[in-house]
Image 1 (cartoon, protein in one colour):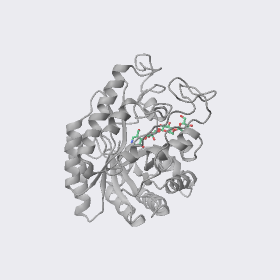
Image 2 (cartoon, rainbow, N blue to C red):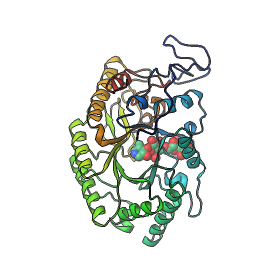
Image 3 (cartoon, protein in one colour):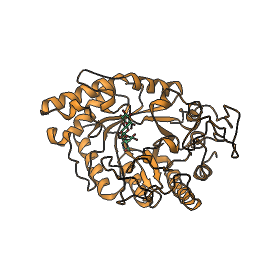
Image 4 (cartoon, helix red, strand yellow):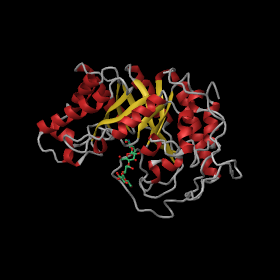
Length: 385
Ligand code: G3I
């Protein structure tokens, strides 16, 4: 993994020349306390952890198309792995039976190659974000044919370019059983084997991952392990497990994470943290994980920090990230990649889930891509801060 190194980071990017009291350059007409440019960083995550694991991020189309000058310069300085946040999901990449929308995905892959990054494909088979035509499929044969076409076309198109695929996403319930879905209903549990076999054939040199949230939790972890064993008994290749890592600063399950790194790697699987973010906001039902089907009404109580995170919460976020990365560094030999689910706080899906229109602070960089105190603590844990 050490080959995905980029240039050493730039200390300061100031595109317009006007700076605020924190040294951040100001963007004209910007909203939501987003200034134009900022002190990007005098250091780089990907460089700091280059001997340990890859440092990834999830990209949206604006970032892939390099539309925002600040972010355009910032991303390759900090990250050496990328995942498409939405543009490779079924509803975007295959809107109809014979209708493929490869434009955005082609640009995503070209972006990764241009910056010499590790490229992750996300995701081939997921019950959510399916195109309408798939949701309307009635027969098992048609669904099997859809899976074959979809995986052959999508994974096949990027064979040799995408380094790792999230082949199956979120197939398990919290108790480790298989989630009710169109795929399970029409094809039975065997759909998972089918997906991995098709992916192995279409993209023979690509790492094949199972990706899910809360799979550090014992019951769900047991479900993953049972799935992996079943796949292997049938001679099907699976290379890695993606622990999504959508957690809360209220409670980082460090012991379960450690036990999971040990358990998954003991099976000879690669382990990656694929969608890391730490919510700082209250959760009405004390939810963990990321079932996107749940949503809640917005309210001042549910959106307590619209104009900045109080120091006490910032300290909690900092400590949570520090504890987490201390663990990651301890197990660096077993961890392939740590990917953040977004570049800067303003981009995060957690501003809109489980309540729309909130202001959340889940990442290491603020809305100006300025490193937060958590970043400094994380960097201090590396060999090359
Ligand atoms: O497609 C419409 C678009 O036409 C419209 O302009 C826009 C305006 O709101 O909404 C668009 O769709 C949204 C889409 O993101 C693109 O922004 C959906 O409403 C919204 O539900 C969707 O959310 C994504 C979510 O997956 C569901 O696909 C999040 O951005 C994305 O971060 C999230 O990512 C998932 C991983 O793939 C799997 N693991 C959990 C993770 C978090 O939910």
